[in-house]
Length: 330
Image (cartoon, rainbow, N blue to C red; front, side, top):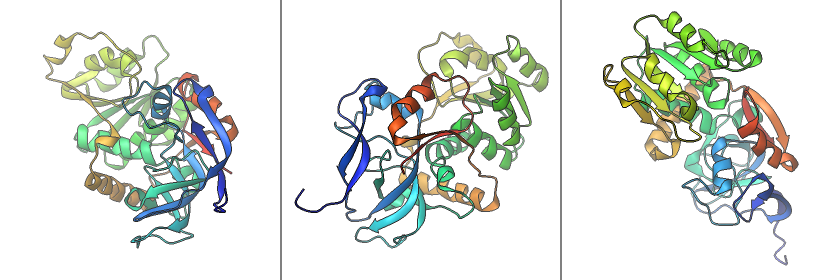
């Protein structure tokens, strides 16, 4: 490279497939920010299930090969392109989307997808905000239209999106129930906003939830694993109740009659259907949560870039997530 362009370590995917297609290279050119772009020195990057689906080639998003995965980055502004006024070199920031990919030592992002990271949160926590908190906020307010005083059940509450949902729902005055499969997971769910938590590995846990909520049922269920739980969810709902599908790993058979008597709804959510204006709105609400103190990401497993394949294996196959999975770039 005669240009003398700086090089970095980054994960590159040259073909779709299993975790083994994630290759760590040490001679990737550090990108240069263009108009309204910033370059971030990455300290940490969140690992999300969607990144494993994209990598496998089964997702409707198919990036041009080769590419670097990862969207939720936290770090320090290294350089800014033209017409960037909100940030300067040295600012602590997090993103909800990168242009060049987050599994790397440096990442490029459009300035409108970058937000200040308050001093009270470290970079690992900053990398845990993007997809989990913005998805949770969209699910609760834009899709479920929750109101204070309603009951929300977070199915699979101990992972990144689940804990974010519990914190937000509690802060906005909902009665929060959660499920988790491990004792550690259940304790973390209780510490992060849930009024009550249930063990979804117990055979009769649905009966325990019914006992707890009584005749009127649950207003909103935020569902991380619809292919397992959707049929049970419909039976738990109140009149006019809503199941919000955040995650599903396959098909399920349900009886549509279960939606009729209660006039209940099954509603899907995907963060990237959000407009630029909606992202700004979510960011304003979440920024307030950081300032007041209820938005505090819980960090789970942490991996160096070298162990990225293991991270992709674990996020899909490990039993019982607790907190947000993070990749450390330095």
